[in-house]
Length: 350
Image 1 (cartoon, rainbow, N blue to C red):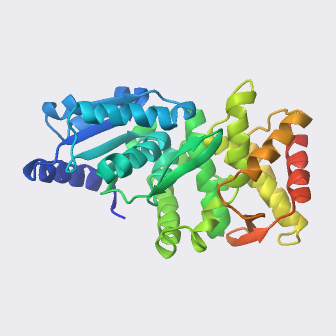
Image 2 (tube, one colour):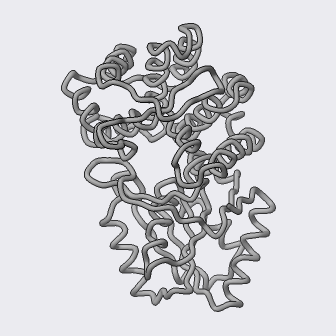
């Protein structure tokens, strides 16, 4: 994986665009409404005006991370004459990076793609690790494949345009990295203000943690499953919130709730003590609220969990904690304990 930050990102992106033009690779830019408005000027500084004749804009929002949007992008690529040598430059948050990578990997059996993540969530997580995916039948990331990007270019100044909700969504993934891999990082994040969360050193730390884990297990067969901490339950909560809650939860918010539930499971399996669990729960609740849900909604979340892509046969494997900074993968959890964790989680609603 080739990942660059700040000045290195700008210089290397300029060189990539120049090389593509010399080699006759046409470049197409994929972005959403927000990144088109706030982030394209930075890309313009790396290319000439003709570059933007090949601009494709998709609607923002998780509800558009689907096959219909893919079809629209494929149609536009064909109409604009994209060929096997074309490169798709994906400028946006996690949805643009995930969907854009999937579109590129499947168009004409695969064209190259480049990632320019523009949100904290995508910079520390979604754009790192070669995964591409779209949602299907209300389930997160059900259709996808592994497709390495030609390069990932991170510009931290994009984060200054983010609303607070989006900053916290990315912060949730940073908390996850700390919980599964680095106690000292957890201590630093616990004390961070909303402004300090955007510190380049903290962003770099999360990138380093994820990069190290992915390098050990690029295809998600063992060690990389640590990164699923909180996600099996979080994805189900997120999916239901889009269709059934008065306000849809961000990905990071839902994962934060999932981390409370899975920490509860870790405690009930005597893997962490109650003091550790309370520290995790109270820290997360400092930043994220628990919505009020009904009994039938808990049942709907349980149904979505059963369809999680990480299920293998009749088993649903979880990543659990043995301490803050240490995690273990492939831990089987009973349906009864999962339900118990959800009931506890939503008892915390204010």
